[in-house]
Image (cartoon, rainbow, N blue to C red; front, top):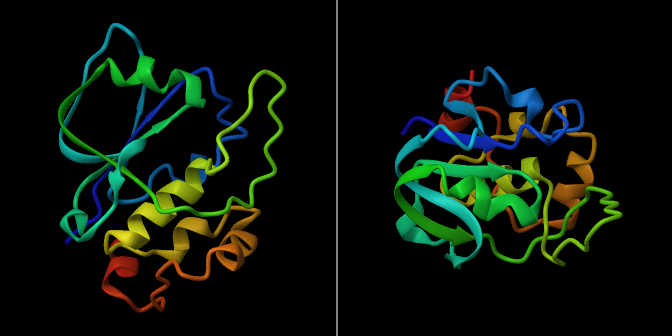
Length: 162
């Protein structure tokens, strides 16, 4: 099943610092920049959301929606998304990203966007180590979360990423 990821990103976030920026142009991953006056038609997708049910077998190979913004802006960005969204959360994972917010505290289970995307795809049948190739903290993230699926580079999902 081909990869199908929609990322709605907040233009207030720095593209230079964004952990997802290296994924632009990857087959099966589309970026949409948020604008309050523009609706995003998402279709039927699993929405990564901390308040959903935990990802499970019914989510295997499902198209994915990731909202890339600060935690406090998630509701604002989601107001522009239309579709049949199934909110799902990841199991408890540890981040390797050294977060430093001066304005608010991140949730204990907060991950860098690339970490959340990799984990969600790994848990839904699309594990692809190439997604982490340009993430500086990839080795540490995988070390902290040894239970995440890691197929070999010859897997079908890895080949579908190009």
